[in-house]
Amino acid sequence: MQLKLQHYGPLADATITVAPLTLFCGANNTGKTYAMYALYGLLSGRLGPALQPDDFDTWLNETSAETVANIDLAAFFTRHGDTLNRRIGRRLTSGLPMFFSAEPQLFQRAALELGTDVAARDAAVLTLALNHRLEGRDGETELGFTKQAGSAVLTFTRAKDLPKDIAREELEKLFLKLALAPWRGEHTTLLLPAERSGLNLFYPELNRRRTALLHHATKPTFNAGELIQDIFLARYPQPIADYIDLLNDMRTLRKRKSEFHDMALELQKKVLRGKFAVDKEANVTFSPRGADSPLSLHLSSSTTKSYFGLWFYLEHIARRGDVLMIDEPELNLHPDNQRQLARLLVRLVNLGQRVILSTHSDYLVREINNLIVLHEKFPGHEQLRQKFGYEADEGIAADQIRSWHFVGKGGVEPMEITADEGILATTFDEVIHNLNESSYAIAEGRAAAQELAKDEVSNA
Image (cartoon, rainbow, N blue to C red; front, side, top):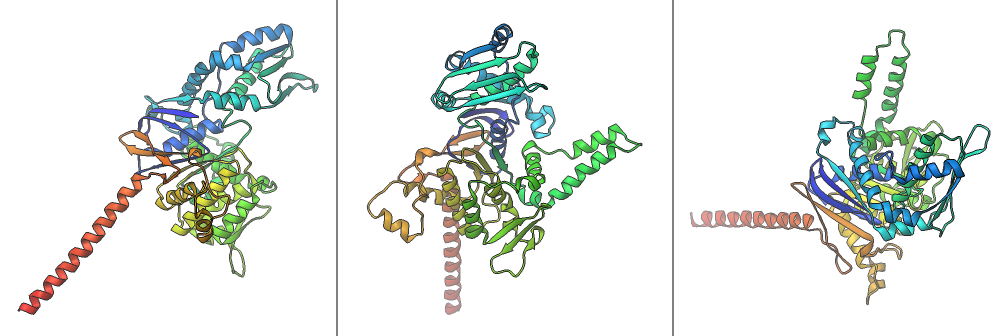
């Protein structure tokens, strides 16, 4: 999938494609979080509401008489794929002010445009099996879509008296899903924001704020103007609001078990070195390894606060095919734990998750490079893997990764990735080189000054 971003925050003109593992690197204030938010809005369905290709009305007119229509999806996308993408882009753009909880003027010149890997989309659409029904009060099917996996034909059934607007809305939802099938399908997208440490700690207070607003609305002295002002003060960008909603849903979500339970255990064991627990009232505690009793989350370490959301996702929510996005995964982590986290995330990709990261961490990128190089066998491969403690399933192919350098002045450039070296992260290499050069020069200068001082004392 490809997304073009123009006059969007700090990004003047950038085109980004995503892969099973996608990395955003670059200096501060170059647009990485803006790009993360745009992708989240697209993949989560939070941006880009109704779509209205011309064929919708044609099919609806046909089905008002026939009640059943067979739609050739391959023919539809051949005729309307580009138009559909442009319309998705326009709807994405128009939704930005509400998505960011910002003034419309901020995005007055913005333009988002969706591009599609046609072969990947057609393959994903072909493999989808659909069986959707909209029932009336009497339990009869008012509208339905069915498609067999491996078939390009969608059967659309509609009751004669079903209002056209309702049928069109269902068709719009369906075709948005089909247009993004390689990445959305039936899957969930979660973004762990850089603000997650504070949100994990203060979400009960944020929830009480919401309750207070509702209580205010029930007072006899209710003032609509004051309430609206309070609501606007309490708004957040949509990714932040969605993460708060997830935390507030923990009472329900904690009852579910993810297929990535083993990854949640590994995160606790190798990175956090302790165990989380969430009780039926959604109170969170953490038991450090060797501790006599659990600690409330607000008493635990900054690392624990930062990674509770990732643990909860892996333990209770994650499924194969889902998209996990993390803004600054290295937050509060020692370099060794950054390496452990890189290995865990690569294993998630190998197990069918899609992962998108925005990072400043040279340690994380260099560890991913090790896993790229170890993916292909070479003489001595097994000895090196065992010597440095890498698991057999931790390698990743270079073609499974896209990495982007946000270069400033509104631009984004692809970072070269090879099987021999991994990601060529010059954005980090240059800083490390300059730091080493200045450190050596300063140390040598000091040593030379000290030697000169000794000589002057000796000659005095």
